[in-house]
Length: 292
Image (tube, rainbow, N blue to C red):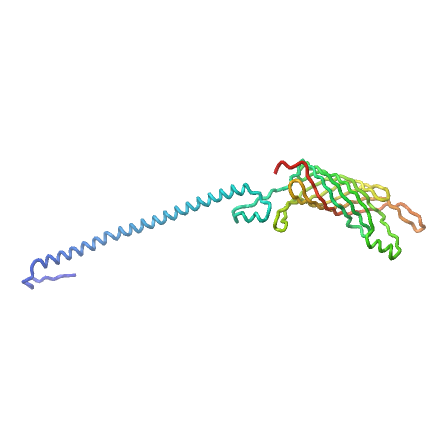
C-alpha cells in the first residue's frame, strides 16, 4: 500500500499520523519476515516426523522378523520331537514350512530272523484244489538280502466241476500230478519299499520282495522231483516286530506219472508240472529291534 503525502495539503495533521503510518509499515514488514523464517522450520519438523515414521516402520519390521525366526526355531524343536505315524497328525504341521520326514525303512531287518506262517492255495488247477500251509524262516544279513527256508504241506480235493463229471456223466477223473509237499531254500531280495494310507487314519510301511530258489517236491504217486521256485510278495509292517504278508510262488518240476494205455495197461511218462500258489499269512521278527 502506497501513501502519498503532499506538503501542506493537510496543514492541521500532526506528525503523529506520519509516525503511525511508518510504524504500521514496519510491523507489516516484520510480520512477513517472521513468517518467511517460520515456514522452513515447519518443513524441517515435517521432515523430522517423516523420518521418525520410517524408523518406526523399520523397527517394527525387525521385531516381526525376530519373532518369526523365534517361532520357526520353536517349531523346528517341536518337530524334532514328533513321530508322525498317522495322516491326521500331518494337520499339526505348518503348511509350506514344516516337512514330515518318514523313515526310509520302518521295519529293520539286518541281523534279524523272520518266522512266517501262511495259508496256501493253488490257483492254476481247474479240476482239483491244492491247499495247505507254508512255514518259512529267513535270516537277513543285510536290509535287502536274506536266505529263507521253506516248507509247504498240501492236501488235495475235487472241485465241483470234477465231482459233477463223475456223478452226472459217469466220467472217471483224477489228477495226474498231485503235489503233497515242497521243501526248499530261496534267496530273498527286497529292493522295493514304500508307504500307504489305511483309510486316511494310519500310514503303513511295506516291502516288496522276490524269492528265487530251488527245492524238492513230493507227489501223491510217491515220487520226488527237483524243483525250481520263484516267488514275489509284499510285507505290511504293523510295527517293528511283526507284519502281514501275501505272496505268489511258482514251482516248476518234472515228474513221472502213470498213464493208462488203450489196452488197459499203464505206463510211466515224464510230465512237466507247474504249480502256482497264493499265500496269505503273518511274519514275526526276532530279536527285538534296538535301532531306528
